[in-house]
Length: 240
Image 1 (cartoon, rainbow, N blue to C red):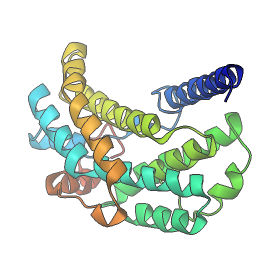
Image 2: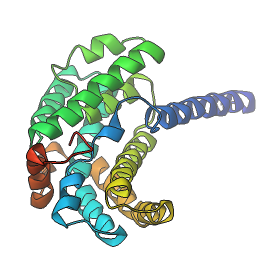
Image 3: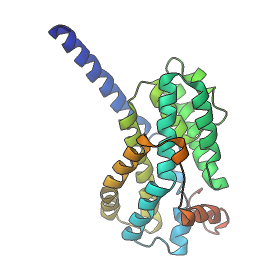
């Protein structure tokens, strides 16, 4: 490869990376209208029950959710969907999407992930459509949120690693936002929790990139109960 060819190749890669970063920041921003602000993932009941009462207990709860709960599971689904779309393996995409849709412990959790998945796909179709996206989405009977993000990211040529890290950051930030309103916490304490969870988010992403679908599993029983009991909680601000 000549110097000029290498320069053009690097310029093309930089342009692609810049476009990918722009899309990750847009799609996973709180301003992207998928309705994430209306879901707490059971945190509302955990606050009501006294499991979460301050910044330290919120940090501990979310740490476990990331490493041993829905955070890790959703990250694995996203990674496998992204790879399946990149390879054009529609059978693997269908199997993963079906498993992800079934892998929810409660009615509210199902509402949360399916509603956000549908909203994500519809908004991208309207504002960020690309060749082949509709055909790829049509392969999935149900598109839950991590499947939607992985599928769209791969269809747009966005690299998996930044997409996955952005997804986990957005998920964690949304949980903290819910906790900050419910406990309540101040803005500084909320940022301290987010900062403390940074290495856990990074480790969860790295682990999810290596994990097979057979390694998916959750041991966050209290969080699953919180999601179930929230359905009949008397006073509620959130939908989950």
